[in-house]
Length: 296
Image (cartoon, rainbow, N blue to C red; front, side, top):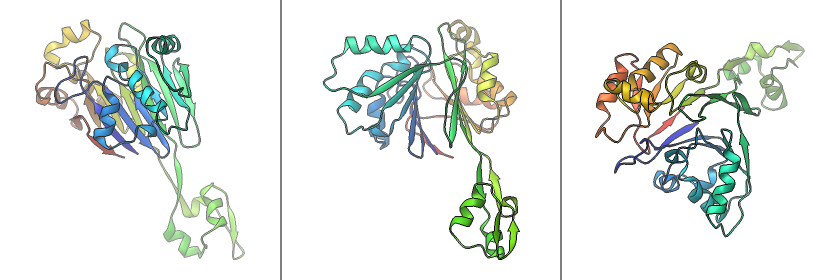
């Protein structure tokens, strides 16, 4: 699992920071959280193939979170993209996508589906599930959570002790089934262990609210906005955003392991003040830079 921060600015991009976009690569899945202006170029700079995108999760329809969609979809339509792009977003997303295609001329058709979300699980397979919760930003806004499912792993030392050969028997054990070998019954729990799945939370463009905690709860990695430092808490509340300190309070209360701050106001020439603001409450925090990658 790898997370790439393609854009970390808020409404106004800077020389160093693109508008918001975060890409999660997991096996054959590529999940793009928001798609600010210039996102497809950031893919190229980061050395990532745009055709790896399988799902786009739109938190809300303010321009700095979606202005990259037309260009990205146009490029996919002219590429060797053989999948059906899945687009998820708040109510009204279908209509807005339709209007986008009325505004722009696409030479080639891209296969895609659009699904409008309410709170709860909206995607699940054998490897992971995706959840969403309504946040508070003045317009309908969603927070997202990626939850990797627990996996049963083979303890090779114990397997060798029992003399179990590679092949179907190991496959059954990994499925949690008991086997018989050399006349002896072996339970899966004797030679396997459960590896807990990772949880990634994405919270941006919201005041601190109850559903922020539902998104962030027990996350291995919380990606959260920190538009302003706490000195500007009144301004933050006026525009429906969180401060760095509030993001840290969220991480602390929700039992988060690591906090990564994003969505910085262009007024900050560097993120030192924001990181210090958060670190006073929660120690395991970093401020993301554009093109930064985290492997989990």
